Amino acid sequence: MEFNKLIQERFSCRFLSDAEISHEALDRILDAARIAPTAVNKQPFKIWVVKSPDARTKLSETTKYTFGAGIFLVVGGKSDDAWVRQYDGRNFADVDASIVATHIMLAIHNEGLRSTWVGHFDANKLKASFPQMANYELIAIFPIGYAAENGVPSPRHVQRKDVAEIVEVL
Image (cartoon, rainbow, N blue to C red; front, side, top):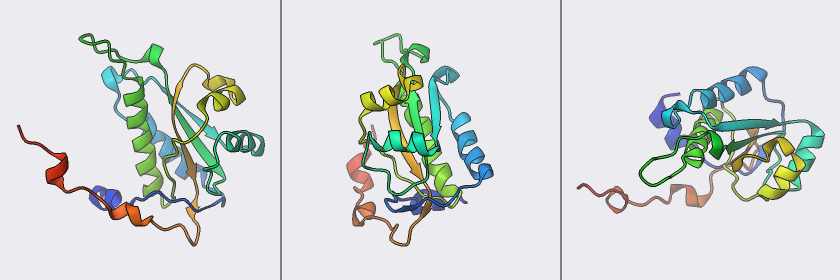
């Protein structure tokens, strides 16, 4: 899909089908994450594909925002592996993981699938349920599926500030 059309059409879909997603589509989504730019190309992130019934149950105990999806991606950044800006000690693990998550979000839409960026989850409980996530700052959960019949944009989707409110030319 043409990029400007993609970013205009993408929306947070909160009603998903748990219909099976092709391995090829999931591979393309994960590859979009893999090639996302990170500070000094350190790639301090990890993605967990949550798809088994047991794993989905554990994940659903950490958030109510699963929206009927049958597969989830969890994105985390690892501070120990990230670039740190020398001037102020700012660690870029969360920035890098967020860039990766944005690539994932757009790739999902490009595949004709839908999702939303879920930030409302109990990260400590998620880490307890999945010990492999323990050393990461968990950034997002992406429930993935095809849009259900009522999976339409929220009325808030079109509410955007004017460019003059968000841009200042110096």
